[in-house]
Length: 139
Image (cartoon, rainbow, N blue to C red):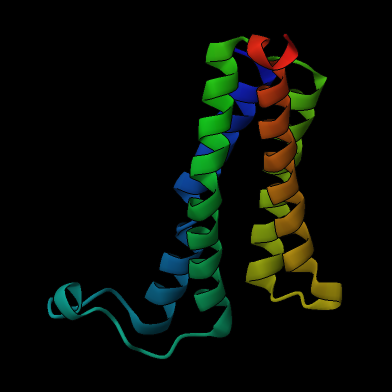
C-alpha cells in the first residue's frame, strides 16, 4: 500500500467516525429519536458544539470526494512522488485539525478557514502534480 492510499484509508476512517460526536451530542441532550422524528427530522435545541460537529462532518464529505478521486487517479496512473505523499499527509492532518477546531469553536485568526484552505491547497497541488506527470504533458 502506498503512503497516499494509507492516508486515503485514514481519511475514510475519519469520515466514517466523524458523525459520532454529533449523534452523541443529540442523544445526550434530547435522547433517542422518536418515531415521528425519523420522518420529520429533529428540531430540538442542542448545544452549539453539536451543530458544529454536524457541519464538520458535512464539510469533510464535501472535500473527501476530490481527495479520494485524486489518490485513486494518481495510483492508477503510477504517479507516486514526494509531492503526492506530502499532499496526502497534509490533507489528512488538516482535516483532523479542521474537525477539532470546528467542533471546539476556535475562532482565533480564522483558524477553521485557514486549515480548510490548507487542505484545499493540498488538493490543488496534488491535482497539478498528477497533471504534469502525464506523458502528454511532458512531450
